[in-house]
Image 1 (tube, rainbow, N blue to C red):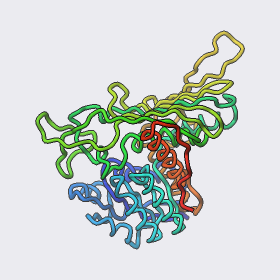
Image 2 (cartoon, rainbow, N blue to C red; image 1 turned 120 degrees about the horizontal axis):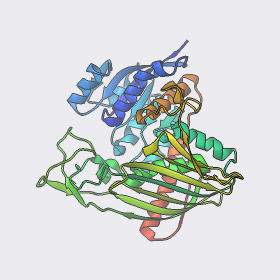
Image 3 (cartoon, rainbow, N blue to C red; image 1 turned 135 degrees about the horizontal axis):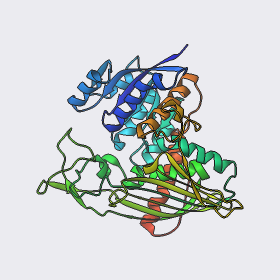
Image 4 (cartoon, rainbow, N blue to C red; image 1 turned 45 degrees about the vertical axis):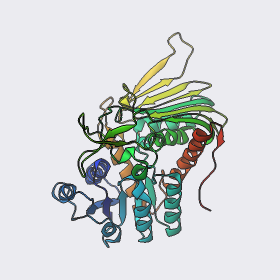
Length: 391
């Protein structure tokens, strides 16, 4: 018998809609699962989005007040996809109401907020999940298995980067992502969180860092309330406002294993459109992956012949989860399929009452690194990563 999971969503922009679509798809993708999601109530400040939630997605209710979501008696799990600086208040209220909580990364707009959110959920004893969806890419899962099995030997270096063009246009709107008071920190939260989380997932924790930051586009056109996203564009001559968080962050790092690493993230480079990428170098080989080629993994496992070199491994149903979306080999899956996988795994954990990773403890693991990165950027010196978990 399947467990009914009444779903509440707070924030119905891009990610709120992506999770809602994924939850609607789940019964058709993952047959035999232990749960059945039901879209109960959605909260958003924009009336058009509320109408879309009920009219197109099938939510039973929509409201302007997120408090009605966390208090709703039929809601068992809350997805928090509002702007980052709102996360901790919503998460804490949902935890106090006894709801399972899935929150988009990095859970808080600042490291301190993420720590508070994790502590609130741990004290309430509720299940948590965080949206580090790239962990769930089938070929990333496969890469982790290869590394853990020692296929590339001892890891000596990790190179991780996330370069995205969403902020490259100076006429791109001044959405909440560019404002420290709404989005919290910039590239170090929005993009580098994925980079560091993948590194932690694949090769282990970060011990210390040396970082630098920059803001390359200082002013942007002001958006109209309820209209546009961080992909939307203004026009020359529109009124502008100041960008208040960083466009770029780069770092050298030492891992707890003794391996070295480099991390970079930027939202204003021109060229890489969504280049979330890593290369892992070991004593026996290497592995490389790039979101822009989601369904390909580069593997270097040299043999005795003269043709040793990087080999392209195509995604297919022989890898975890892929077969839920497409049969055979080289029939690709897409970004929202990763959302579907993580939502399926989270719902399964809620239904089975078992731990889920990445959860809020993983979110605190990242912001502990982020805190060290920001301290380093401010001081110009190496900084140790200190576990920020509230004891």
